[in-house]
Length: 395
Image: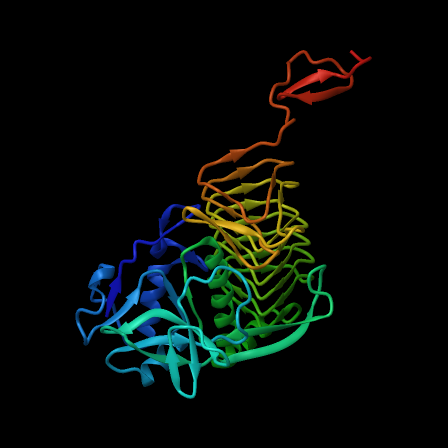
């Protein structure tokens, strides 16, 4: 198998897609593990213009995160000149569409939209030139519910936990999508492919886990609640915390009264008391005391103070994000922010939805006091320009 070096650089981290981490593992390493599970390995790398020169070679783009079940199902039917076409259930709405859109009808796949056909996505996996698309059907759990909030009252929302997934990672929004897919695959594998794993966790921790896989040396408070989670070794979960559909990296410390849903919390991270995270990722060694964040990506080594605000909703329309040199409409009003590695946000800092903060940026809110005289007398003061100024009428 040959890996195609696409040259994709993902902001705000400014690193190649192959180095982007999903569930704490770089994309290239995840690809290697996926290929090994189906009996394949990378024999070399090629430039994009060299893709397809060897008709008997299998090419995989380096910015693609792929589940083993997806590749295995495709290989069963694919032959020379085949290209992967992935059908999703349910179909995505909004976000950033980076894979070429295609159609499927009566056993045929095309590259342009066709009325009355089922949409699929063409992914960066192909034999040789890859002109003939072969479809991969979804597999997993699905359901329906009512979408809450000002934009979805009374509307029906479909959800899916799918074992056959594939995500092209070219933007931080795609990191979120890849994270959700990877967590879903992990839940599927522990519930269906290895149900003894959840049973073993329940026998060890009968008071709190439901369909959870818990590593060695974990410390979980009896009042904590874990549902459909994967915990690596040495994780601490405090009192009254509730985690649903989450992956938690090795050595991570989660304080009391934390609520997290469908989120990935990286190794050696720290999550403060009463924090809330939905549909988000937190990087390695990051410390977050933030009251709440949704649909956001926090890089490695970040510090987010309590009462810093990461907005996740645009009341005036869809959230737009920077993609290369242009602003792109994501198609949805609900989306958080992205923080690069080593970002620090002080109390009172507010970041608007859809924005990204580059690596190493430290932000302190206006009015934060940075200069306090050693001989400061008791009294009433206001903050101005980083200084304490006596209020009018007071010394």
